[in-house]
Image 1 (cartoon, rainbow, N blue to C red):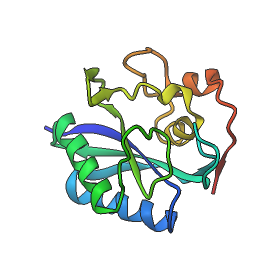
Image 2 (spheres, rainbow, N blue to C red):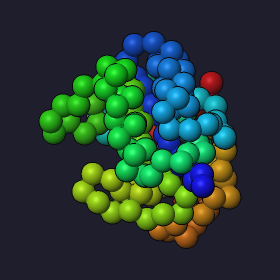
Image 3 (spheres, helix red, strand yellow):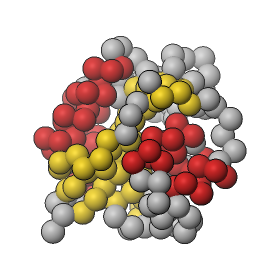
Image 4 (cartoon, one colour):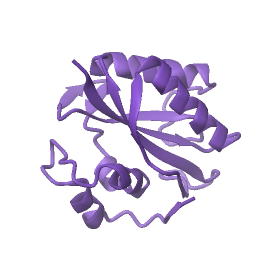
Length: 162
């Protein structure tokens, strides 16, 4: 039986449009078929400002993989696309970043796998594209819709759809 997983994509190094295109293709090849795809949004970097702007997007995917298998696939895609994880670097520039936002309405709290993503409701660069495709989805931990989370978000970074 298929499950819906929602994945955020971001990139701010290299040809960011191409990176997101490649990541969406790889998600389709490894994780499952894309059911919904947001537009793309440009934002300033979050956390560390002295870096190029990010291009962000969200996809909802129908998958037969477990949440753990989706995480493993996302990390493999990132590595194959050239992402280098630096020890202790949390918000650095990257050629691609894939984050699992939701897996159905599951709540998972493991050291390396936290679903729903623990910070998504604080970040406009996630909420804007998420709202575009799933405005009425209820966050399983906060019991609020994406629409409500976006309205309540205090993040002041500008998000611009391209």
